[in-house]
Length: 513
Image (cartoon, rainbow, N blue to C red; front, side, top):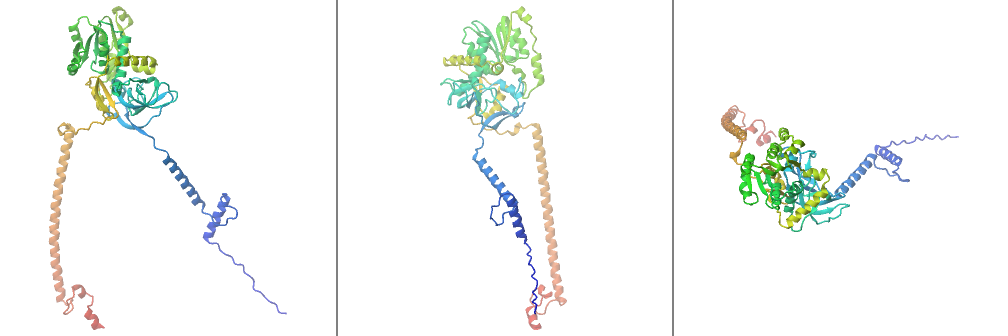
């Protein structure tokens, strides 16, 4: 019986390729993460690639969403970046405000500049704002939007407003208790020039002083915006004598108005008043403070009234001086009620900012604004505008007020084009600049001289190189002739020396073959 022996069957073991291992791992991972569907055997993408695609999709969605949202609208605004000099007053782009409940949004057409703004720039007022902040207390324009709970105002109304800061901008949101509708015939420029100045003047003349016929008034800074308002309102009372104190440069222009009885230079006004009237005056209206308080009090008649409504003497330079602030207050004598009782005199003070924003006098101020507008309609008062400035020129406007060169109100117009900046003449350079220019010129001359010396050296070097090159050519030619004499050249050959020095000519190749 024959046995049949079969060879043992060897099982074939297949070694998985790296690709199949990756696919299997990816499939397993996808199944574990719940991404593989039942019955799907095709290899899945790696986890890292899948997550990267998802992140890219999310980023793309975020980008598309961000593109759908329009960028916030911006406006120009006069911004105080820090207390001090004019360099801290800048025109910056700020987000447009939105009216909150009880507010209206005003498109500003004109802004009023007041001495209080100069004091804010210096930080020389009580409770100064945090910087950066938008400057300005007075503006006029049209209502562009109305917030919730607003009554009595609508979009398109022509108004003037007294916000606490933020007025010097293209748009400002203001609580309605500080907003007043203006007459249809009144321009925005007149509205910005009349409200704050005439508010102060009216309250002083009719509420605090109770001006009556036959009285005399000594008025400081008669050429300013408030000074001109006081003059006009005082002229509504018969037989009032006005002593106007200001710098000599303004006398001619103010005398032309015919409203001031006696124009006096501020340098020695006490003696000048005494020359006119030995008795003194009934009323002293002081916006300077400091030592002027004592002088003014000394000019009062019995039953006289002294009123302080400003402290511009604090502003003595471009930046705040603590010494000038301290001196301004320490120069004021301390007057006791007993002294007032003995001398039959009165002292008063008025601060519109405190009344309006800190003491809730908005209702009283509103009724006064209505009286002022009535006087304007009757032609009894008319604001005096000294000049109008673009927002970009606000520093120059502030400088003019700081130097007491204005007669009447300074107004800012957001739509006005700024003045072209003049070129600085050469003769106006400072000594330091002239010295720097001289030094710079000297350096340039030395550089030029060095450059010329360098060019000369280069030329000499070039000539030397040329000479050396010609000598080298001559040497090379002599070497070639020597080679020919020594038998290094092929006989009767016109080939160049390169062929002679080891490269066989065509004829030599044929002969050798």
